[in-house]
Image (cartoon, rainbow, N blue to C red; front, side, top):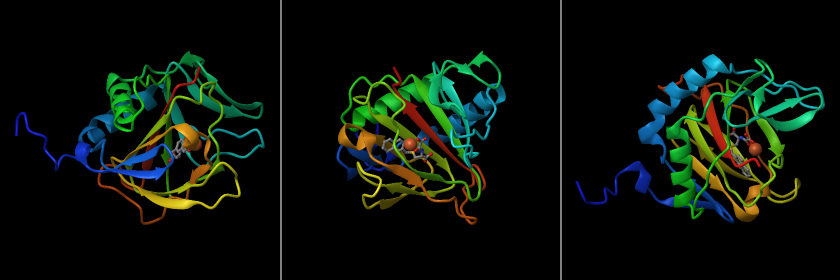
Length: 217
Ligand code: MD3
Ligand code: FE
């Protein structure tokens, strides 16, 4: 196949448009999935997964860690990006080159050139964990897209609009799927349904990971 485009390769599967400037790249990260999971384990050894508390006082059901120059943190005082892990007072683990390269390639594939992520938030979902409808607006630059990579057990992604009350569409996010959100969709409400009891994947068991890559500053 050298020199020829292999149309069966995950990276050349059709892009699905799920909203304005929002693209689902089905299986885009499949070739790198094992390496991504190994890297997550390394990161978590330095910056352990933890259930953070929202300003409203609720513990999040998804456990989180981060890597890169900034991590996303929440506590009773609010949501923010921090260069230090509040649990260890250390910088977050460096973003592996594979992470940054894959995120950049995915953004490029969806039409966003030169995406340079500064933060990678890692969400870990176990049975019943969910994320309610919200907007990602703690970043300073909304012109950069957000790239997400799903690994492990499948989950139902909920995608709304600019207003909380807008109708939501549902998309199944599976192991190796990548989604890129830019333009108008960048500020759309979104969330995930509770991870189903029966949801699992050979690589992770009943656990789902989601990596989100963001330009923060
Ligand atoms: C749509 N995570 O970490 S990924 C989040 O599956 C988050 O863990 C979910 O929402 C998860 O903030 C959904 C998808 C995602 C991320 C950012 C978005 C979708 C987005 C920003 C704008 C629009
Ligand atoms: Fe979000």
